[in-house]
Image (cartoon, rainbow, N blue to C red; front, side):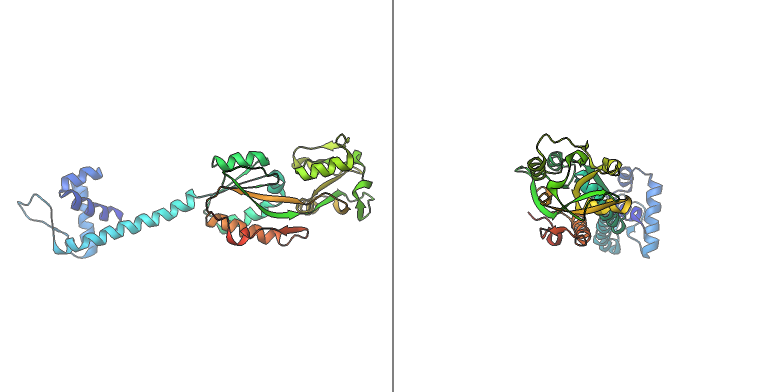
Length: 305
């Protein structure tokens, strides 16, 4: 038997009439009668009394007993459908600043999709300040940022910190360890990382330092980093990723900038299984990186109200 036969039986019981039940289901009376016949054949007994002169539908004792069973059948059927809706309509909606999205999240999100093939994934790049608005208006459920501000409707939880390192092309004769004050700003490919970094940079080189290249977005870094003598200061996660693709090397920087903190933005509601899985995979990846320190037990407990 299928939903059609159970639905036909319950509608006839509800309306007390074959003709009215057929109208409600938008089918003909013969079609409805065929569904009842299929149901009775499957069950092995009649559920309605058939006799000339009886206009109102009457149930057999077995049909009467079958009513609650049919009701449970339909509820279970609806519950089964709802599971499909959850998989299709409850996505992992995530935003991040471009450096996190480019150099940390690709592997994590790929692993997420391998484990949640039927779950929709939505990812968007944001600047830190834009991410607050995206959380408030419901565009994303989580956002990973580096520049925090106060918003009474959004919580910012520190996730991890990572050291900053100097990255340069492999043939650059810089020593393995170099003092920040010995660097020449004229060879720098500069990116504005976070407020504390900017304060450090202005203190060391001056607020009007003339850099070789100034970039607003990190994805362009690799196009300029291979210039002879060029260097850039980047988070260690970015350095590891770029060293896999480019002929560049990381150099330990003495008296370097303060570490970069990455925060997770969310509303104050508890999050679901998709977000918990994301944090588990993110923790697994970051725990392997030398120079990264995990800061919050969110990786084990998730965000709570």
